[in-house]
Figure 1 (cartoon, rainbow, N blue to C red):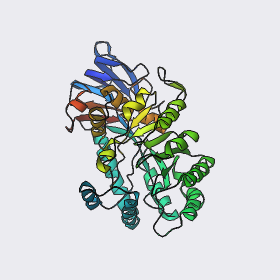
Figure 2 (cartoon, rainbow, N blue to C red):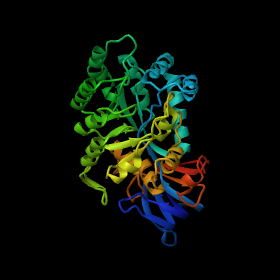
Figure 3 (cartoon, rainbow, N blue to C red):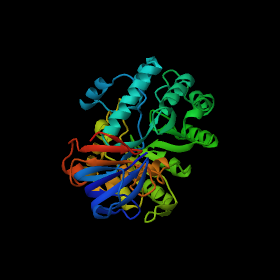
Figure 4 (cartoon, one colour):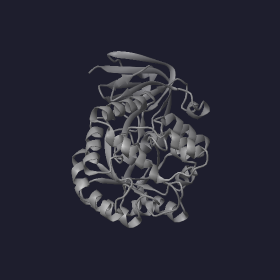
Length: 397
């Protein structure tokens, strides 16, 4: 593959260990890797050149929490919730029925469309989960389909206990036959440790079984109220605990303590559990926004993710999540961009290859139709993503 020089960049946000922001910058992509970064005036020659025309460049978004394998629509549920009905986990069952009824071709087509939409919005690396199958056959099918499209797949058989099933018997299935069926297609396991979903004891069984099977762990926790999700995630050294809307002092201390061996200045050491904030979901469910400012101030590494799903966050727009984090969670622009790039990479354990602009890393970056990243929050809701390179391949622009 040929090398491409992207020059005339007004502002280049690296999110490297020094968190450098370079003015009048350039970057050289050689195949699917970043080969050089520095001042535009010192840029080496390359096979091709692309004029950024004074736009801002930053890493591609790393969306570490999505539910993209689904069919059907839950617009009526959303409308009812906006009219005052409280969100409950049971709505997942509506999507389960529609998704089970869709064939492989249809699910693959829908998944490809959602990933293409995400890439057009600046997302260059993403995870997605199972969890709308809730049977051995369906969870395995969804994991197989997801593995052909997404960068990483998470097993979420423990999303909801199907209607009419015994909770403990279903947990046994999640930990046994279902786990064995999905194992060839997934690298992570997750559990919805929440009222209306899985209890602490059931969640513990799921995490233990999946860890013994060799999967990395993550937890849906503390979304609908205080609960054991954060504590379980830290206890099991989960890579992330996601939602984290309702945290007490002990939860924050546990998360902060998990990072005590991590040197953020050089991005290495004994890493802890990332707190993944999902602001688009918080707005849709009218939950309190995750306390991003409090977590960052406590020394917790955080991620921002879209949580794209049909019931509570039907968007792939990481730009929207970043803007919301700045405007309503009180993060700085730099903190929000870091959470949506390097933080997401940390949550997925791929911080050595994606999530920042550094020589040798995958050539994932985006250009904004704006002179600086500040415009993501300064001009919320505007279609600012102008061009995207994903593993060195340009999309748009």
